[in-house]
Length: 380
Image 1: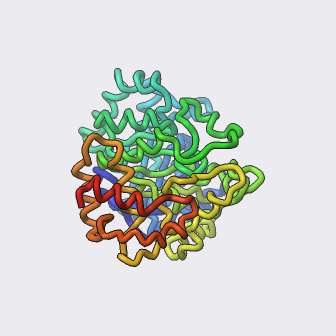
Image 2: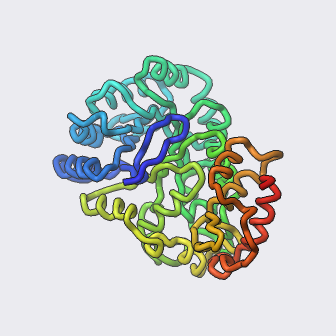
Image 3: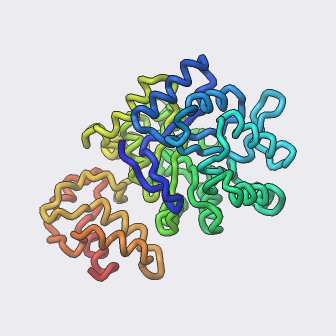
C-alpha cells in the first residue's frame, strides 16, 4: 500500500480508502471481517457519514483494539431521525448524533471532523453563521476532532471552504464523468442523462483542484465509481465501461487527491481495489477509454495519464503539465507550485522538441509547445 500526506493535516493516508456506506447491508460479523481485512492490507482511512446505528457499531467493533491504525472521517450534521438519515444543522439533533458516533465507534476522538454535505450557498450560510460552526470549533479546540474537513459534491462550495481557511481537507466527488459536469447545488442532477458533445474537465473543477494543491488542502474522493454506473457500458455516460483500477488511477492523478474512498461489500472487493497498487500501466489506463469513447472526449487536454512516456530526456511530462496547468491561471507562479516543479529536477527546459511523446498522446495534446510555454512560465 502506498500512502500520501493529506494536505495540512499531515496524516499519512492510504491511497485506497474505505467508504463505509454499504456495511449495513450485510450481517454484522461479515461486515466487521471486511473492515478488519482492509486494515490487514494497509487501508487506514475510513469514512463514516452514515448515522444508522448498525453501520456505526460495525466500524466501532471492527476498530476495537486497533483504533490507532485508523484515520476516521466522522461527519457532523448527519443525524438519525425516526429511523431515517436526515442532514441537519439543528443542535438538538446534531449534538446527540455526534455523541452517538463517538459512543458507537468506541472512541473519544475523530481524526477528521467532517462538516457534513454542504452543496448550496444557503446551507453554507446557515452552517457558518450560528451554533453549528461554534460546535465544530468547540470540538476542535477540545481535541475531540483533530482536524476540520468538509464534504461536498459542488466545486463552488468546495472552493468556498478552501478559500475560507477553515478546512484542512475535503471529501469531494470525483470521476471522469463528474469532471465534465458544471457545478450544481442539487446532487440529483449529477445522475441525470448527460448531453453529447461535452469535452474536457469543467473549468470550475479544474480551478478547485488547482486551489487545493496551492493551499495544501488534501482531497479524499467519494463516488469515484459513479455508483457502479461507470462499470456498465449501458449506463455509463461515456458509452463504454471502465475498471476499478482505471477509475482509481483517474482520481489519484487529480491534483491534491490523496485517497479514494471505495465502497466494499466483500473481502474480495477489498482485494480487487488494493490490487491497484500492483497494477501495470495498461491496467490503469483510463485515457484510452476516454479517448475512444463514442460520446465524450478530452481532445487537446492533458489528463496526466502518462501515455507520453518514455521521454528521451527523462522528463516527467505528466507532472510538468500538471504544474503548468496549476500555475498558468495565476498572475504569478505560486511559490508552492514553483517548489514542486523545481523538485522534479529535470524540467521542461530539457525538452528537445522531438515530439515522440505527441505520437503516443490519446488526446492530441501539443506537448512540445506546452513544454516551451512551461519553461518560459517558470523561467527554467
